[in-house]
Amino acid sequence: MNVTAAVAIEPGQPLELRTVELAELRPDEVRVKLAATGVCHADVIARDQVYPVPLPAVLGHEGAGVVEAVGADVTHLAPGDHVVLGFDYCGRCEMCSVGKPSYCEQFGARNFGGFRLDGSSPISMEGTPITGRFFGQSSFATHANVAERLAVKVPAELPLHVLGPLGCGVMTGAGAVFNTLAPKPGSSFAVFGTGAVGFSGLLAAKVVGCTTIIAVDVVHSKLQKALQLGATHIINSSEQDPQETIREITGGKGVDYALDAVGISAVFTQMASSLTVRGHGVLVGAPTPGDDARLDLGTLLNASSPRLSLVLEGDAAPQEFIPRLIRLYQAGLFPVDELVTSYKFEDINTAISDAERGTAIKPVVTF
Image (cartoon, rainbow, N blue to C red; front, side):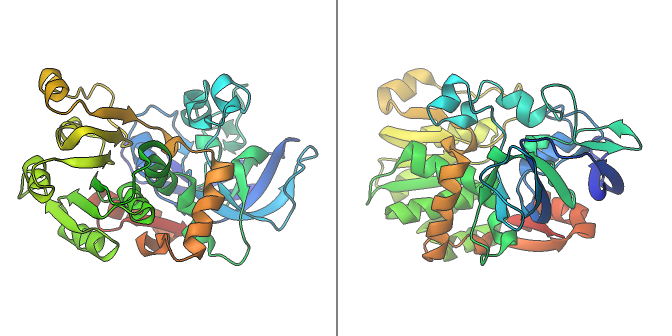
């Protein structure tokens, strides 16, 4: 069938709305009519070939919509079901078998390869297969064929444009806090970078009972938003030294837990140096390959001996974690809707530009 997609043709250039061909469903797939899809940093770095996804490409990996048709082998979903789409994984390797699908041994090929592992794609343009399997979904399109395991059924009464970002950005930030850091109530927490990932970590820190929550960024409006959503302190790192200011806030000790949602080596160094003795810091931002971090290992070892973790997709299993986030949202404890700015599909390049400039926390394109 013919569908409309926003296609990345050349590196760094605006996406182009094109008519593409969507293949027939395979037995283990479902066809989803997209209602909304978030715009994530990974879409931008794929478009710009920082991560070399084959172009032309239909990107997008925070899709949400309604199941329109199912393959013959599909057992858990039916037409009419509302779903949020997660990342791709094999479901069979050692990490998948212990509930850690974000560390699937095929994660890179399945999420950034652009094609199925057999070399095929569900999307063609002018008769030629193109990248149509980005993160297993390629949701910058009106429809997507996805493997059943990627689609998480969600309550039909909830707004799909709010739920879409749960599939990547929100899951990444919140999962890093809930699953990896696991802060103790009454502890201190700092987040470096207040995009959607950082804000999701901040909201999670509030849920678990952190009482000192510090937001670090260079955009004044986002720092003010952080105060509204639960930060007790803000630091504009273009005006203040984050490490020194965090130690002032914490009485010279440093924070118990920290999240780097930026993915720049200098920020990672600041985060590591802001931790208290045996503090725990996590990197979830997407660094540019070759961006080496400089750490004074001797000083870190003797001064605080922090724990540093690098985490993919919030260390989460989407089929379990997305429903958990939804329950928190329904209870009023995780106001992810406060992060969302909606755009029409034809305005997708404006949404991407606003994300790059930081004027929108979580742009979501609606169809």
